Every structure is written in C-alpha cells, then in structure tokens.
Image (cartoon, rainbow, N blue to C red; front, side, top):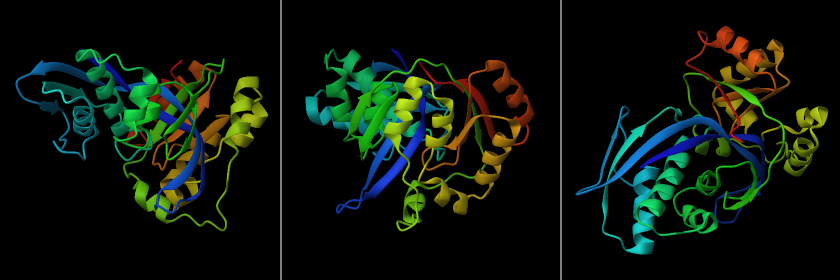
Length: 278
C-alpha cells in the first residue's frame, strides 16, 4: 500500500516552560503541507527499508520505531518491505521524521486490519515521537504539552507556501538549550487560532511568532537573513518553522508564490513551493 507523509509547519510556537522531567511544555498551531514523503509498504519475509538517502535500521529511525511500538502493543509477527521516497529535508523544522513514523502507523493499521481510530493511533504515536500524534491527525490543530494534546480545527482560507531552507540545519536540542527564559517571547496561539478563523489579517501578522527563532538565528544566522528577504519581497506572513532551519512565507496568491519561487530558487539549498493541506 502507498501512504503519504506530509510535512508540517508551526504557524505559532510558544515554549511555555521547562518541565521537571526535562521536556519543554509547548503550545503550537501546526498545519500539514502538500509537500510529502511517500511510503510504499508490503508484507514480506523480513523487514527491509530502501530509500535514495541512507537511513538507519534501528529505533533512531521513526519508521522502524513505529513498527516496534505497534508490535509491542499488538504482538503481530508480520514483516514488511518498505520503500521510502524522501522529499522533506532533515533538521528543517518540517517534521520529516515524525511524518514518516505517523505514515507507518497508518499503514500498519490498514495492512493488519487493526481498526484503530485516529485517536487511538495518535495515542500510540506518543511513544514514537513528540510530533507524531499531530502527524497522525494530519490536519490543522492546536497542539499542547510535549505534542501529545492535539485539538484539530479548520480555517477557511487557502494559503500557498514558499519554503526556503539554507544548507545548514538546526539541532532541536541545541535550539532549546539556548533559550533565555528571562527574555524569550511567548506568542498567543489561541489568539492566532481566532485570527485564522476570522481571517483577521492584521492579527494573523501580529500573532505568528516562534519562541525558538532567537535561538536558531544565533546558531544559523542566515535564517534571519532569509526571513528578512521574504518580508522585503512582500510576503505578508513569514516565520521560521519549528526549531528551524526552514523559513516559510505564506500568501493567498499562487501566482505571487510562483514568482517568488523563481526569484529565490537559485539562491538557497532547498526552495519549494507548496500549500497548506486542506
């Protein structure tokens, strides 16, 4: 069977604080994109994973971890031949690994006729990775906690997206380690949700913020440059996604994004036009 693993954006990311267990409490608005990896999964005599990029065959790979977690819960013995086509770059803030793990969970649910609801599958996804529950739902949502609390919602406007990632990635661990808790910003994700529902463009611009931008700007300074270039080009909404290093720019005009794509495509390592998945 074939399953798509959609990239995600953080339209808002608030690091609420650090928990006693070392994890960070978050509030986010996350949306899926049409940009996706593709998994083709079949039953086989042994589990194999082929891809055009080298990938580990252990729990550090979310696809393998998803199989192990599901096997622990349901004690199945089946093995799988998996072919992965990667389009989402790593260390980009686009949930490339998490989306692959979530897609594998959906494949297993269908191939093995487990008949799990999306809520049950997302609950299991917590054991695979922090962004996996959202990627299981694969729709716009308010996400809280360490990623396990997912509340889907729908907003009416279609947005076209330009993604720009420099060659350097950003380590999520390092981005969090550099947070300055005394001075860091705390965007209001609920306010952004209301602005999206009401299509209040001025409030959307004010509310689209990311606590982790300041850390990422220190680690990879060109991210700040890319963001400013997108603003100077005329995009109304520009932000870094997740812990970086991808900057995204939104517009309601597909033609405008197409023009910007041609302007930026030879300047940076990864430039893609896509749209928020409805």
